[in-house]
Amino acid sequence: MAIASQEVSPARFSAQLRSHALQTRIMDLILDRGLDVGDALPTESELSAELGVGRNTVRESLKVLQALGVIEIRHGFGMFVAPNNFSALVSGLTFRGRLSLRHKGEEAMELIDVRQALESGLIGSAIDLLTEEHLADLRTTMEAMEAAARKGEPLYEHDAEFHRRLYAPLNNELLINLMDVFWQVYRKIHLALGTGPVNLEQQTQDHWEIFEAVANKDKALASERLQRHFDGIRLKLKDVAAA
Amino acid sequence: MAIASQEVSPARFSAQLRSHALQTRIMDLILDRGLDVGDALPTESELSAELGVGRNTVRESLKVLQALGVIEIRHGFGMFVAPNNFSALVSGLTFRGRLSLRHKGEEAMELIDVRQALESGLIGSAIDLLTEEHLADLRTTMEAMEAAARKGEPLYEHDAEFHRRLYAPLNNELLINLMDVFWQVYRKIHLALGTGPVNLEQQTQDHWEIFEAVANKDKALASERLQRHFDGIRLKLKDVAAA
DNA sequence: TACAGGAGATGGGATGTCCAATGTCTAAGA
DNA sequence: TCTTAGACATTGGACATCCCATCTCCTGTA
Image (cartoon, rainbow over all chains, first blue to last red):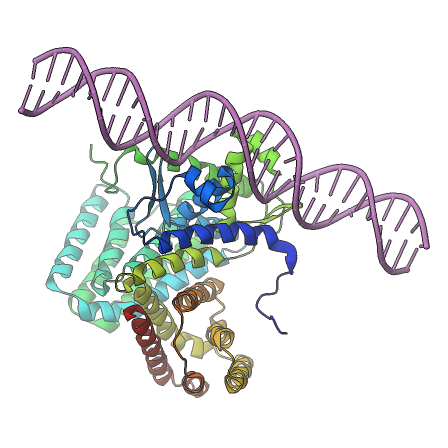
């Protein structure tokens, strides 16, 4: 018969299947009714009645859907189909990253690898589509970063913004969201473990160099400098994991 | 005062913050106690008592953590720290993809873009690290695919397996999981919309060509053929979205 | 020794009650 | 007429309690 899909035991997850099925039923209900982003879902009680399960059970599924970024729940008002939202992944990935740091930080490192692959792999296409306007936005971000560095403020937000805008030309929201997730996970892991002293000037300088390569439409150089940028991040993470 | 972080209203999500906080507390509890993959969590009642919240409330958070792949819940036995598991993302992304198909299928297309970027961007590194053993595995998969195609069976599993093994040399589980997620989402969207007739021979042939380029360690050719493979997928998706 | 079945523990789920947040509607006041 | 404070209905949040379903492990019997 060769089911041959997963190496899990057979009827060991019947409960999980049931609750997953309920989540699917709710999502199907949304799709079947033609609800779109921003539209309201039935109330908890209505769903409970329509789906034939208790309100608590429905709530559990709804909370999961909320966590997955499918719906948005507003206390006292209702539940709505959510706009794109990947904040869900952040929690899960952060947990895995921190868990892995107790061993050798492999998973956290893998995360950097994926981000590096995505960014240095896509910088070429991004440069192709780059307009003057995009470049101006990037410069603005860099100037803000430099100002922050001078004041000794953390560069977290500016760093994220830089990378976000770097790939804005691709016009791919999923990609932006994914990279944002990776970035946030890295940041959270870093914060959770206590960051050592950071060299703000060096960090700013790195980004300026990437900016320069991008501005000159030098794909190879941009890719290389991005690689180096990530190598630096990787080293920092290794230090933290070793401690 | 310049909060200036997000463009959302201020105290509109206090409830979400609270439930998210509870999830975080549970994850911190796992980390603080040094629990590792496979270790058992306290029971629902214990957690309820320790965290000072009702059992139902704890359950909602636990379900979320389960959905995020953080813990594994086994009815009648207990809850355990889960091994890496990204099946969570599948549901959320599939929903978004199907939702977007009602418009122009933009999000589904973005998903293909990201996958294409990841795969064609990383094939070079994968080829660098490719061993004879990896290649043999790949060939085995291809032969299985060909056999299935001859019997007129769907190639889903073989297709997934091929791509999984293609990047096995990178030894990056996160990457493999991510690509698996994208693949499953694509498949689910495809199934949900009813797939047109598929050309099994053509599909097999595509993969053989990619295999050939990889076997010859021709990075450029492999990358190009991967690109073409994804272009085909993109076209198919566009057809479905248009219907 | 091997198997069957029960005991105990744990999660799954339903129901009812009350609390808290939100938006809306109304009425008083400027 | 416009504004605003407050009452109100609606909706989600949280909890307690009860019972069911499922699992593992252990014990007794063949």
